Length: 585
Image (cartoon, rainbow, N blue to C red; front, side, top):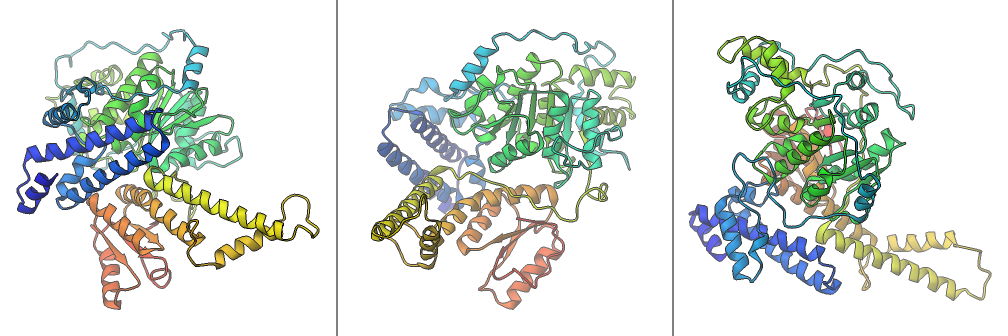
């Protein structure tokens, strides 16, 4: 690391040093997973080991912060070069570890994920698979095998080019049938555009690139689509920040279906659940059993996460989708994204392959049949609009808020529950236990003090309230742990990165976002997170002069490249016009 730090100071970071930084990051990640999985490690030793690894991770982050281009190497979905793998192997040998478990080098065109060192198999999954030892094959929906004039033509490039320069006024949404039922099993009324998509599912359509703008209910549409298609069990692959919210939305929209969420190795999941939710970061541990579990539907939320086909994240998603399509004829496959459809045409490749529309080097059978029906070839100018229409008809659905304004409410409030993980989450859980222990101790001491008096049956709620009020009123330090206000602040700090991640996703897909925070350190954490992602932002703080504050407001309102404004709740709570933004976090 000293060698890399010296190179950064001199401004001469070589490719070899970048590979070394990434190799160290990969080894830290592997070692962390190994320690968590090793049941033989005592809890006290595990805490010590994790603290050491956190220290190395901090050094990596501080080093990368001095050279922004290095940050991309620390991402989970970063491309791993052959040089990095060689260095990783050498480091493993030097440290006495077994090099045989290293990932094999992945060919640039390979779509099968490189074998992962750590794979999990939850006990309840084994039980579920044993309960369904054999699934009868379904040959009723065998797709067409096409042999025609386009055989031998290179078609992936022309298909992508068809979206690069669309015809003026060309639609980016497939034709959808008229809406049918407008209420769910709980009596919640659906918006018309949501009912249209469900009508398409009811008519037999099974693959969708759902690119509605944020706020139009993509999550509800996806969950209800599985219900309409009777496509269970359902697998939902989602970002970590919305994992818990997906479980809650599943219970809201499909109350008759059981839902389970995979955390870590998934030891506590229900293998018999109808809906399984997993985040991208732990999918690699569960690829083996997920592919063989018999899922009949798969949803990928924030599908732009898999746009880099060379990343392990994308390879795992494509692998699981391919295995599902081999086991189930016409499964329900949905890719959800709020980002504009035409951002980088290469982003389409991984998403289309997940949906089964294309293979590695050629269109899938259904798309090939549609292209053959056009009677055109890539040499014909008319081929491109016809090819674009053929792809859209496979299931691209894009609605904007202005198009369905009459259906949506004036304001929508969404609470996103999150789970605090890692060192910060563990420390907060420990502090909460200390706080609870202290409060219970005070309650018991108060009861003991008045034991000669009449004591009410059960819990004395009046006494509980007095003790709680005293805790809130007591702003001093406690030798036994944090007080309530310190706890709230620590929870806010732990949530800052997750909230910033969600705000960044929202800014990418929906435009300008106002991000509110109470504490300055939370604002700093959010600002750093936005800077790492290359998102331009500004801020309103209590220590600013009126001139600086107005400059920040003007920058956010007038500059289209400034996507987020980070605001103090006390300094920007009232009296500020940020009308260009329609989304607040």
